[in-house]
Image (cartoon, rainbow, N blue to C red; front, side):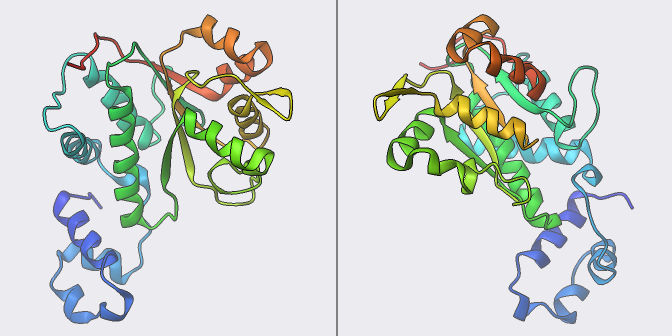
Length: 244
């Protein structure tokens, strides 16, 4: 079955209707193919959504975030890679089992692109009911949370490392920009700990960063950087500072 915008729209209408209001009258008013999917309880996977539809949703989300957003020569290959990644398409050097590290100079739009990616994933997740959602957290917020709760932040929630628990999917924005801190007189590295724990639990994590490989190695050390190379697909966003 080929999914179209009309079919997905009507499935979304049904899924976003309260359970006690879902009835035959509602279903009968939907697209015939949507009726079949709903009545037969056909499971839709992210990979079933056509690339063109995902990208169209992505561009709508990007414009909602930044009304002057333009898909120029720099952002287009990044968006295309992200949408293929979302569909679990195995590309030349981008593997679905790895997380995404979006790297690029300051002001090139990394946060916007990843925020739109989060929004697309969350929109489609509500349609296919996969019970997952993305949470995007600035690196400084990880530090703030660590100050408040210490190592307890790794017990559950978005930083949790229990692989049996369905954790929210996490994106750390501006990885490497966080300040060095001390915890009870000892130097602490919450971001490094988070990466190690996700690695050990075999849980994917995503991030954006302004730092190159050597700077990341200097920031987090050889041990963590070595794991980063195994954990991330590195996507480079080129261009100049867009902020005016």
